[in-house]
Length: 251
Ligand code: HEC
Image 1 (cartoon, helix red, strand yellow):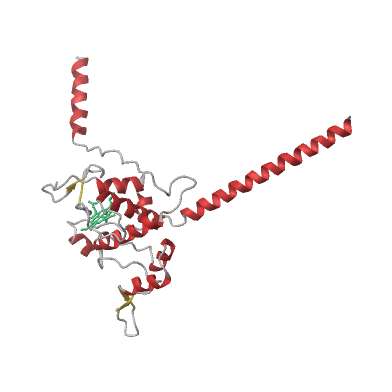
Image 2: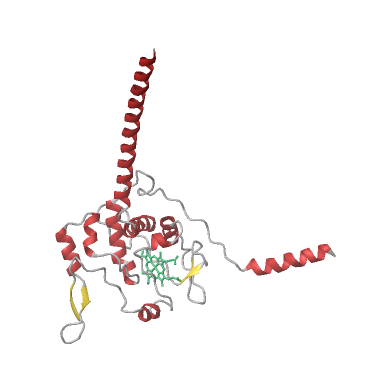
């Protein structure tokens, strides 16, 4: 009897969980920005900006990043002006209460690909592509996760519901088709634009966007540590001297 009850419970739990998808653990990448000596790999971040601009920006906004911020990753003021001016920005309202278009300036934020959520959803199988400004922080183990997601598509697998299989996405399939393919973006130097390299670069770019202060925080951390080491040495020296004096007085 007991055995029958136990096997019944096992059967129930088995059917309840059989359908549940278990995502693969993230690939682990050695990122330059990790650890106490972590720094931004600006060449990679610049290439990553190119990948974002030419591929991801067709669907994903990055509303929290302004053109001016690109100076941080190595663009000159003039280059930033040119980049900004190549966009049309909606501004206003003017004196007549109307919105108008003008060329972008460095203080403008990245221009979103869709005017509203409805337009974004209807162009993407009913799912709004999330803003990528903070995506690395918004996901657990964000950098490794986004890298795994971008490099983890199994070719050509689209299910009947219009979703695409990806074993790293928590639900196993998502509304984004594999956005990268080898050679998709033209790199300026002789670095190969393989899916892996483009994913690596765009994640470096997104990491910088999510946490631009990371590098200066690491530098400050090192300064604080150096300061404490000096302080400790001074303390030991004065302490020794103090005790030596007291000791000599006694004897
Ligand atoms: C053709 C449109 C399109 C392009 C191009 C595109 N995406 Fe997406 N992306 C989407 C949609 C739609 C979703 C929402 C998927 C879902 O939740 O089912 C999404 C979701 C995501 C997510 C969130 C996954 C999660 O955990 O919720 C990330 C990260 C992402 N995209 C990164 C990128 C990057 C990086 C690029 C450029 C290399 C890119 N996308 C290009 C449409 C696109």
